[in-house]
Image (cartoon, rainbow, N blue to C red; front, side, top):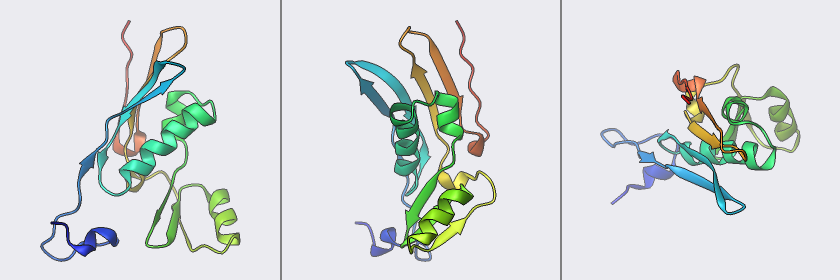
Length: 136
């Protein structure tokens, strides 16, 4: 049984962090469009969702989507990699922590995009020291 501390930002002494994997497939127009995942804990779902939103919603290629700035909300505080987004969120009345550079705090997503023409593109998250190579 999980202790109540899994809902807070820090575990209790002697308690393990929640650990998850979330391999995911984005289906669009009846075909697989994006295969991605990340190992991690509380921030993994948000990292994956932000990459999916960047590809499907913003039309970014997989590499740009993985490298794009991220944010995470925990314990009522918004953590941001993007200073402009942090300013906007703070102006709306939310507490913000600004990160000066990309950080593994925001997850380390690996992804493969299946383009409309059937070709592949891949990305390994630089936050995790990742790299990707597509071999034909």
